Length: 294
Image (cartoon, rainbow, N blue to C red):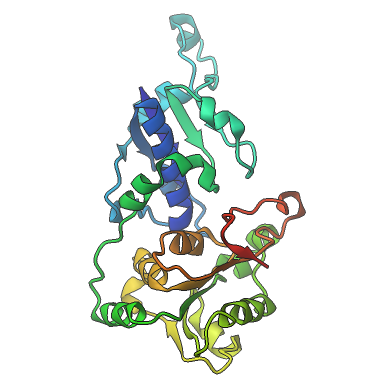
């Protein structure tokens, strides 16, 4: 009675993977374990850290033996003696596409999940549990604490996420994901501004703050480019600050998806209508129905 989920990618992807595994383990009344071996063999071009430990997650790390018992069919003595290549078992579930996989609701234990699972439908039955599991740790940096207090006092705050990094620098990643154009952010700000009779307060988060300083049009709104050095190896703190904002303009990124989803604000969430640049994935978009896509 075990569910093991493969954890890979950045923090936002890790959260989607955990949420899907958590929901499945809850339905099956099975133990949830995480396979974090990807972080030992990942591509150095896009280094990532396992970061779910920042949350009070309800899962433990799976051992190599536990993983192999689920993903491979059991071999008899002869097969072992002849060193016949192991076959994957039916319990090894590889997500076939980025669309919601209808078979997910019929999985039985044991199960090993491999994929990104970027869809709220995978964990829609346990939303309060996911919100609780992803409670942010306290901000420890004094600058971040002061910023959080300022954000909480504002009813017209807007978090803006500008994702660049490997989306720009790695040609293969750029081909798949692409980046949100400046016109997208301009239109999104116009939509949100229509809800207020006073200037918006912008809090801009990016993995390339210098580019933001040189290229992003703040439209004369009071603005803060959030660049907290202490958060470089603790990105969940930036996600925490983003979630405190009342409105959100997210990038085509699971990181800002979760910041907006976990937000207690009752403002507007704007998301890009085109989540992937690659044509084969152009119809996939993990945005939820209450968000505005442009």
